[in-house]
Image (tube, rainbow, N blue to C red; front, top):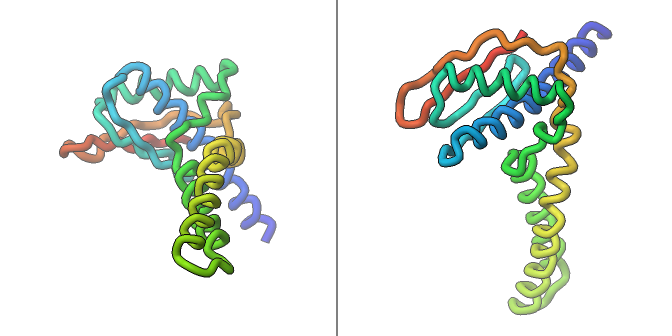
Length: 165
């Protein structure tokens, strides 16, 4: 049982580290390719990057992102377009709509109440999503080593798989 718990903790730590490196890489790519649109997805083995960059350019961006995280730029681990932001916004908005519609009689009253609650949820969802990323990312990455950047597709949207040891 202890071995399983240790394995699970290590897997979560790796995902959080890869998530931080993914975000830092997206920041670096956005600096280098300001007209490019990039996205990523992290897991225990590394992450995927979707967007117009070749393998060499992505390898350099990942390396630079890791160096910058290790050199004291932990803010690179936080990204405004993270899925955590979307999840917190969707969750709060749905809850707000449910709360806002509860107990209201009449369409106008229900709509007005829901709108008020949803607007409040939208206002607080951004700072909440940024705050939550402190728990979904881990910028302490000294034990992560880039192993490979592998292209997965040459279609309309380039995709690369980034592996770590």
